[in-house]
Image (cartoon, rainbow, N blue to C red; front, top):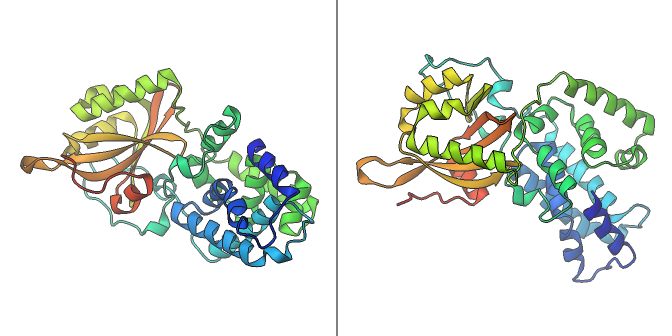
Length: 338
């Protein structure tokens, strides 16, 4: 991306050698490295660990950096190796719709929850989207951290995943990727071709929400109003015909406005009286959902809803229920609201 390349060029001629400024120079690459590691790993927590390990390794071995590549390339080489090590032997992270068929609103019993390691986890925009950057680059950053996009990346073997992210998301040249992975340009091109073929067979049609789009702001305002009033008829009218509702850590999801509406008036009726607090997550609008605490008053944490939009309608409500895990990550209070 242009902003990061400009930083790289400014640093190249005056890299600190053993000075206290080294940490600041390395930190300038944190946001881009976090985005890369998140796409590779599918977890905000693991990506933070990977970036920390990358910067620590770079600090410790900086005296051996010979500038045969740029600092940025060198850091991405370290980050790739860290991610590949972390992915060795691990299972694929996914969304509920990647694991089983949709249920119906008549299926009232929740299945057993799966561990955190099973799911593509949300990440706040502030950790991976450049603030005030070029609008086209910001749009690419948002599109390529969507839950659906990241989940599809995880169908790819780790090295293919790295090739596709570096070539198609970060726009590296094939020769640069080959150098980073210690392989040939032909091998990179072959891996990219296979990765693109896999992605072409996957459903990534879910769209992201652009917060500066007036029509989508209006749509989301109507969604919040309908949800907080628990006017399910009005809420369902805002849903796309292919809309889904998922609820990690439970491997359960619903498909279509009718089933979603029946669920919310049936097993989900406890959501009546909720409050929604806006946040920005995975390139989309999102809301912390606080359910009514009942006669004692107040609202308690219940879910992080990541909302995705397509064709002027809401096409996905991704409700992450593990609030102890995700609320601190996105800066939402974990206490009861008055």
